[in-house]
Length: 407
Image (cartoon, rainbow, N blue to C red; front, side, top):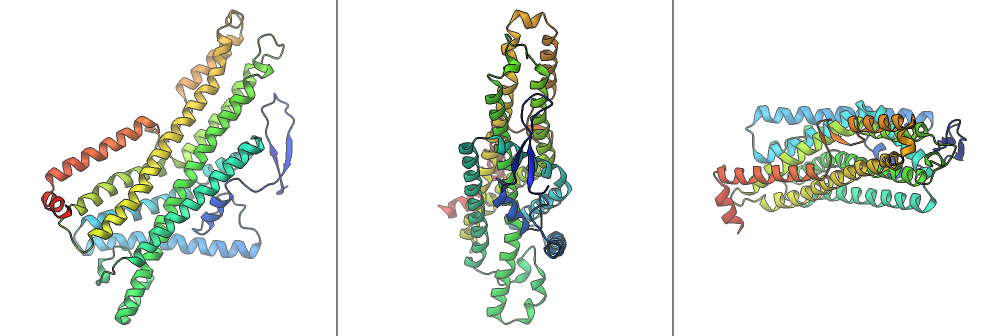
């Protein structure tokens, strides 16, 4: 049974199930990458009893390490005063740990979506399926390029002499003071590289998974629309006019979009808050008169900004396209409403019920169920960040000195 999957079709019930051999999941590169961070989303990637035991041990170790980062970060604020750089680094740590915890708490919803992605991708023709798999591979490569850059920057930048300046630490700090100066530098840089890999790596990978799941959801409705545009069940001159079959098939897709939203809406909210605060705080820190770490901060800002703007634009445009494609799909019912025969028949009430249900419960991706992800939301975020930065520059005492020093 594990080697086969039943692919649902859009045919009226009872439907003929098309049984296909179990192929590699289209999201396989991303799903396997999550194993490094101790998360098996589909519960099928790890096989064998011994491998499962090792993976469980690895998952527990990472769970403890992530929350150790949180405790270490909070302890730093108890010992020291708050600074711009500390806040910026802390927000990334907190957002990553929140993402990790929510991934574990929402794993059931994400697992359902990932399995549904496989079924729906198998319905695509070979050309479209290979195109999507190519996109997945490209995105996965870009993710690991980002992770490598995040990690290597700590090896390339100048080492801070005082280990207490680091806001989060691994267990390596226990042996730090017993080493000579060259080894201290190596251990300190290794410490930050490990932290960056697990903090920035998990967040970047989760962002990529969300974008790919949303992109696949868009394909669900495009394929649905192509299937029903000339389908017998929607032809007025046919004896098989069946609105219920159309609406039930549509609701299956809509339900899985809502499942995707249930799994990621809170995670997306934490990302957007992180992006908003981190970029603004980083820019304010650069506005200080030039220091020995200014070039390092500029590099971090550019790297963080490129990932942030990619995520903002990607989620906004792709999520908006999911809504638009779902609207085009349900709008096929309007073709039937224009005919007088339908208006006088009981079928009209079924159409009206389907459209009313959609208007009250639209197929959309949201930010914690408060706002719909679309182009308008993107412009709102950019406007908020721009306004905040302008006000902060005007009120920040060292802003003008920092601008003069940069010029």
